[in-house]
Every structure is written in structure tokens, then in C-alpha cells.
Image (tube, rainbow, N blue to C red; front, side, top):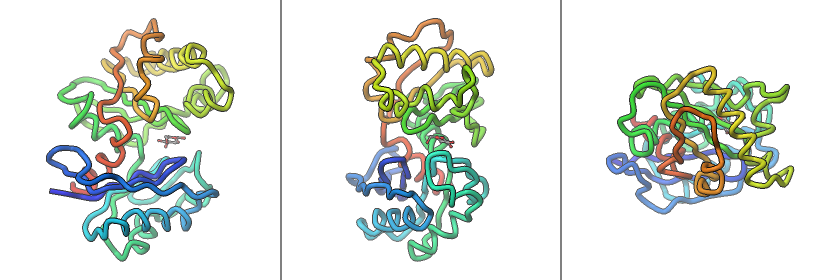
Length: 245
Ligand code: BGC
């Protein structure tokens, strides 16, 4: 069965029909640039363009880079503040001709896909997926079951919001070397480990493609640390999975 998945990110809005049996894109994904400012209206236009590109008529799952409860977007750390307390499910649903919409946090979506088709397959106990990108997203699983909206990217580390120090955007903005950035990631992982003692960390986001540049540099973390298996498509796949439930 195919369901459409859309991933709203800091730089792009990407989507494709997803083959839910294989956990993979059924067609090559289509991407439009995220508008700036990323207001609800402007982003809704982008989402409509991505879905319209495929002439899709069926259920749609959409990720959002903030807290989402009951279709309402609650926070907006890296998008326009107009998203706070917006009924995003209704707004986006109307904009795409009334197709049924499920909306969830981006890291939660990526985590759900990783636990079913990727690096978390069959893993019991506490598993934490962290996505490193514009921000840091988190998805916490206990015996395969998601605890949604954990927002571990905003833990305080050395007096700072952790994602402002250890996201890939922080690396790029300050032009940090891999080893300098890896030290920050290590500190962050050690802090999360101190709080949750997970068995496994799954490292997602675009940077998971370059895991060989920084994962070998990380020491002193007891948990196993592995790169995401689905890499950048995990959000799209997880969104589609959420919409099929
Ligand atoms: C947001 C999270 C999101 C993460 C990755 C953070 O700033 O608060 O909700 O999952 O960025 O996009």
C-alpha cells in the first residue's frame, strides 16, 4: 500500500508516495525550497506544490520541526512563530483539497521509520534517535513504543540550548572542524545518556551520511551509537506510516 509522506525541513519541503510494505519511496521524491519566513501559509503552499506534483489523492502524513499535539503545532524553534498554536492539520488539509492529513514531529517520524525499517529494527529497551540538522530533534522509544515530543535538542548544556551548540547548523555557522564538533556532540550524548541510559543512540539527519567523519571520534558513551539506516528519507517514510495508522 502507498501513502504520501511530506517532510517539512529548515531548507526544503520534500515528499513522495511511500511504499509501506518496503518502507521506501515508491517514486523519486520532489522538493521545493522552504520559504523564508516559513509562515504557515507560505509553507502550506510548498506542501501543496509537492503533493500536486504527483497528482496525489489519498492520505498524507506531514512532519513538522516542532511539538505537535492533536494536529496543533505548539512550538516553532526554527520556523516562523506564527506556527505556535496553529491548527496545522486543518490548515494543510484545506490547502490540499481536503485530503486526510496526519501531522507529527519530524524526529518522531524519522524514529518511527528507523524502528520499523532501519537501524532500530527489532531493538528493545530504551532507544533514542537524534537528528542533527538545523536543530536537534529527538525520538524516544521504550520497547519499540514512541514517547512523542521529547524535545531533547533543547536540553541545557553548559548554559546553552544544546542545539545552538551541537546541531550541524552550529557546526556550519562557526565553521567548526569535525573533531571540534564531535567533542560537542560527545558532551551532548553523554548528557542525554546520564538522563535516560539508552541501549542505543541512532544518529539521523543529513549528517548521518557522513557518520564516518565524526562517530569514530566519539568516546566515553556507554550506549551503542549507529547512523540511521534510511538517512534523509526517514522523515518522509515515517510521516506516511503515521498517516496509515
Ligand atoms: C525542534 C524539534 C525538532 C528539531 C529538529 C528543534 O528545534 O524544537 O521539535 O524536532 O528542531 O527539526
